[in-house]
Length: 395
Image (cartoon, rainbow, N blue to C red; front, side):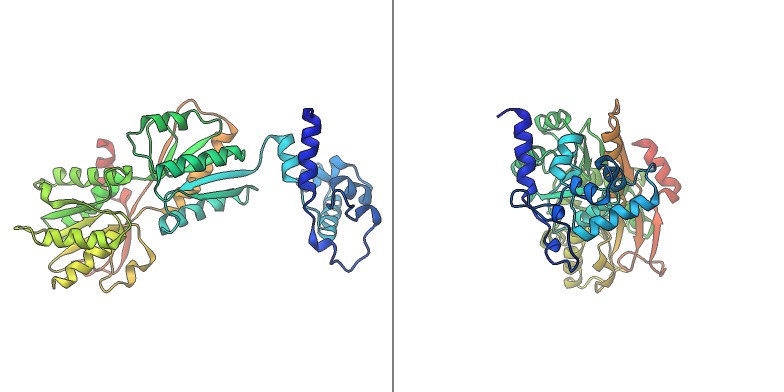
């Protein structure tokens, strides 16, 4: 079978999908608009015949081109609605070499962080006429590789990825750099690739500095996994804040935990409270870690914020409704998705010579778990503080 016959066969296969609402319309349908036994679908040329217009005019009207009059456009859309016409996406992609589908890979769809990021992505891509094919890698690097191959085989126009691979995996980084379609990393960065995410070093720095501002002096950190770049960045920010504040660094005050399991924070907090010199405050790398730590602190009869301070990261919706409302760092999740989608569109239009890295500005949300000043809940942009500007310059 030659290439033209193969394309024809593919288009014919997709034409077998048939618009059910056509059979249920109460109006009479011209014979040439009825689905025949072979195609079972309304075609563009059928609409053109019915409206006595050219196929190119129908196509231009459906694309809302400016050279088509409003009267013609309304006639075309009325016919589309009446007869249940649906554009053949496969046929269109064969002509335009675009599928208008973007692939999104995230490590855990159950996390509110990625749900909000995807919502931000969709707020940009949907109005532009793109669909999202979302994959859950379950924090598994092998599964991520398989799903990326699947997306590429389905001819997606671009990829947005929060990678489950370790940042030291140079082979995977080279694979991503060599992809035939544009890619933007979200939340977790790899060197040399376009990236949009939170300023994790800034998050760690500002959270630790906030605890210091509230009068805490022995500040511990319950980190996320050291194999995840966001956890590494927040740990780095914590350590830089200790140096800037002339607070002693104590390795016993840093405990690694699971990012998204409250039980990890609970167990880490119990270990910290058993130290000969326990901390008087904790910066937790995520809100779930902080919630587990809060439970352990309350069971130890600590009074927050008088005896103990606690701050998390994520600004989860339920944080304000806890027994002690949780102070947190807001990463601007929806904005991350919005910026990542816009950057991907930019890459699809032209290939820049250098990779871009865009960081969203985190916001400090002060609640009862750290608020010794008795203030009401208040969000504060990190950039509003002079120390943050200095910190950014040091990075």
